[in-house]
Structures are given as structure tokens and as C-alpha cells.
Image 1 (tube, rainbow, N blue to C red):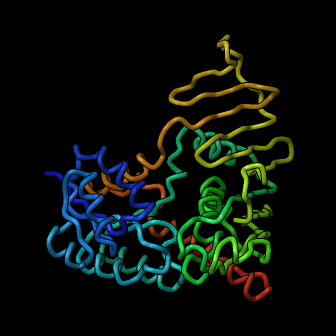
Image 2 (cartoon, helix red, strand yellow; image 1 turned 90 degrees about the vertical axis):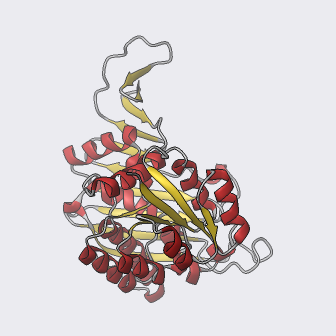
Image 3 (cartoon, rainbow, N blue to C red; image 1 turned 180 degrees about the vertical axis):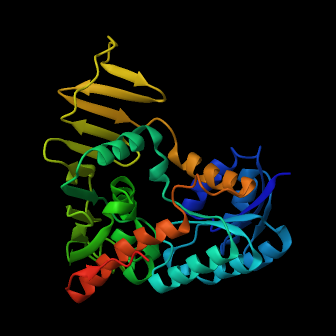
Amino acid sequence: MKKRLALIGCGGIGQYHLSHFVQFKDIVDLVGWCDLIPERAEDFKQKAGCGEAYTDWKQMLDETKPDMVFLGVPPYCHGEIEFELIKRGIHFHVQKPLALDLDLARKIRDAAEAKGLITASGFQCRYAENIVQPAIKFCKENQVVMIDCSRIGGVPGVDWWRKKELSGGQAVEQTIHQFDIIRYFMGENAEPLEVFSYNGRGFIKDEEWPGYDTDDLSTTVVKFAGGALGVITTGCYATSGNSFDSKVIFSTRDKRMEHKILGTTVIYGEEPPKDDGAADGFIVKGDGALKAAGGALEYRESIDAGVLCDRTFIEAVISGDGSKIRSSYRDAFKSVAFTLACNKSMETGLPVKVELE
């Protein structure tokens, strides 16, 4: 028998999930779509070709009785929904960040685990197989000394994002993907221990984005277990892609790895394999491409990591085995704690320890 799936939040991230769900009708019944804007929920119903549209999520739970729920609500909307899902014994997948209050996220985590629920968070970048596995291997086999990370972009066109009290700011709401992938690559023995962050404002004017009230940029110094140091810079001040080349660099004493999430992993300093004679210089390995050029190995992503992320959670609920989920609520909590520690440092002007538990 197929499991029943419902979605709360039919905005932009909901559209992302919907594009995946329609590929999973072999294993799930899509039973409900909920959004405060009725036209959005109705649009999802039409696009899916099934399920019912709602504006009241409790009514949806009562009537559709889903086995699992995907939450695509803004960061400031977490809490009541999760506790109701836990009370009803419904497994859930929640978008990042889990919450803007660490104590709230901790209570949700503990309550879900006590209920024995399968949980996951939307860190789909972990599922980009072709570029993630070489990166993990690099960090396992080499002692990383320094990490240099940047994510520079523009201001998203949603009202709540431009208010730091509602979104958490760019580090928490967007660049958390980079914070998370750093944790994932470095492993549990090299977790972030302490951060010190500066923020900057005044570059983005109110006439550009009326009501804008968040950081234009921030820079964080990180101390990791094992002694490595890192610098993570994030900004939404850019008006052109020419402004910056966003990536994460992992440096060892004799080589480095450059990772662009959902894009490429390039390793400098390792002996490349012999060219297979392909005209374009690429060597195909499995589902990905491996390029040898100038002493570097380049891996490129060729799959939709979001599809694999969503399906892994769904299959975990169906089987009752969550071991293949790469970002459970408990693990995602640590990445949220990492970013919220940066916010606290900006507020206090002091170094802040990362609360991983």
C-alpha cells in the first residue's frame, strides 16, 4: 500500500518539492496541499492532478490523514505545526532553517525522537553524489588546515526574507547550505566549536528594497575541533554575477579542494588519471564527469540532488528505516546552531560557542 503525503507551504520551495513529488506517484499518494493563499494551494492541486487544496493545515491533517508531511513554511512559522505532527505521529521533512530559536528546535528534535518519528531537513546539497563523494574522500584522507567559504548574491524577492527577525538573515536562511556542507565534509570529529562574526550594513538602500532590515554582508571566523580555522563570508549586496565567485575552499599543506554546491568539486595537487583520449578532455566515471587539467581533478554534478533528497526521505518512511537520510532533524539542528551562533556573535560583539547538543 502506498503512503500518503501532504505539503504545508505552497510558495517557492513548495514548487521545488512539487516538481519532485509528481515523479514519485509510484510510491506515494499526494493527498493534500495547504497554503494561506487559497490560489496557491489550488494551483498545486491542478499541477499534481490529485489531492485536495486547503488553507487550514489542521483541517488538512484531519481529512487527508497523511503518513508524512513536507513543511515549506518561512523560518518564523515553525513550532506549532511540528508539535501537532509529533502528537499525531506523522513523519515530517522540514526545510532549513529548522527554526530561529535554538531552544524551540531542540524541543522539537527531542519530542520527535521520543515519538520514534522519521525526520529530515532540506539539505539537498548533501545528495549531489558526483561532487560530494570525492569531497568527503578528500577531507577524510587529508588534514584540512584552513577553510575559506563565500556566498555572495542578491536580495530574494520575498518580503519576509528582508526582515532579519523573520528570516534570520542570509547566513541562517541561505548560506546555511554552505555551513552545512562544511560540517558534512569535515565529519563529526571536526565540528565547529566557536565563531566570531562581524556584520555590515548600509550598502543596500531602502529605495532599492523598501522595508529592508537585515545584514548586507557578514564575515565569520570559525574554530573547528582538531585545530582547523575557517572564514565564512556571506552577502546579499550583489547586483551582478560578476561581483564574486562563490565557493568553499578546503586547504591542506600540499593541496586544496574547491567546492561549488550543486556544481563542481575541483581538487588541485593530486595526480590526475590518464586521459582516455576523449576529444573534450573529460573522463567519464559513473554518472559524473572527471576532468584532468593542469594537475587538477574536476568533478561535475549531473543529477538533481533535490529529487534524491526527497525520495530518500519518502522511502525511509515507507520502509521504516531512516538510516539513509543524510540530514535528520538531529543533524540539521547542528547546522542551525552553527549559523545562529554567528547571529549571536554579531549581536554581542563576542566569540560564541556553537551549541551542538
